[in-house]
Image (cartoon, rainbow, N blue to C red; front, side):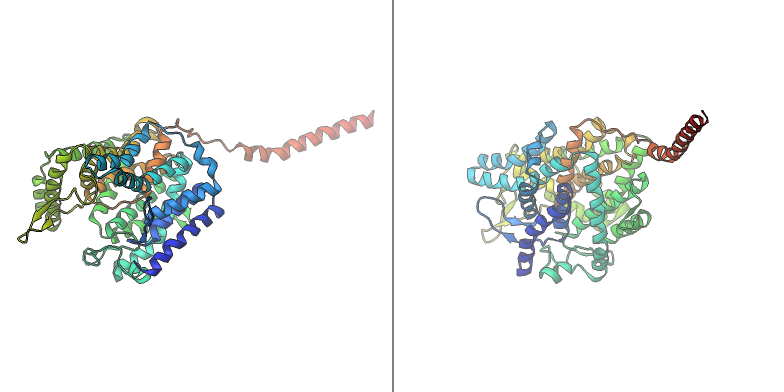
Length: 480
């Protein structure tokens, strides 16, 4: 934590208020979220009594809520909860039950619940409040593209020169590993101002996927004067430049899902992904998952180094899952109680576990209830969008395309949560927006014919005819 990092965090509050004075409330919420995600410092903040610390994206949420109270307070009363909000509600209040069942006390439970609400609940709530229609999700998609365009030169710089922008501006590396996890494929994995290079890869993958689908659907032509044709090429190159194997896989999978909807008018690949994720989490939580064949296949056919990394991950998840099953329902609560410890030769307890993925953390800390609720809060909106409201045959429609690609990105983020723990508040924001769309009846997708222009062209002829009739009438009267 450095003075310049603290100053940036303090100045972000008035910036959010300023955005509400120059944009509509909906756009101000989106720009505040994306701006905070792209540029706020990591691992810095201010401790606050009772409520979660003023840090990172929580600081952005605080600023947005206060600005809404000042500039758009009537919007708060328009929120109407629905069935699809239940998973997020359970995920937000689950920490209280985890603390109580582990004897950590009501104060600890309340504090953990408030932290969960600020981290996950507020972005979801703001998405429900402002982005619950096709127009709102289109504006979010466009702002995601603009945020990606801003990050392109920064990613290109760090991929060549090393991830040093956070160090240069804020005085320290955003991740405790420094450069050790940034060297990949003969270059560097960009970090920019995010938590880790994996998070940047996931973000730029989402940007590229959104740009690609909006280009194919003809939803946009230019952004900031840049042709979408060139923008797609640049963004795809940037994803490759981010040197994240997972991002490559997610991008290919997302394109397959979207083109299946276009060509065969089916969401089967998306549903298979959701079912596959659910099955993997079930087997992982119950201890029946066998990853030896996957590791052997990767070692022989793909990359031995990546196979070794995957084997290390599976081994850690196995011992962590085994401990989590000792407190199956609500987990172990906080304070590192979900981790696995052994005594060393000095009789000291040493942590021998590594928590790489969000799912194993959720399972260990908040149990099966927490794991099921966080999974459902991301996957149920994505599945319901195509099953209940907008079938795959509509995903290529320019009005539906932005929402459709964001729903697919939401499922891909859940896939990343199975492999990594790189939380991005934009995805709960997307989940809230998609949930709002699911709770409403489908909007009309018919395009109105441009008749005013025809009527405008025929108006002079009508006037000429009318003037001609009037002149004939006057002439007849004069002849009489």
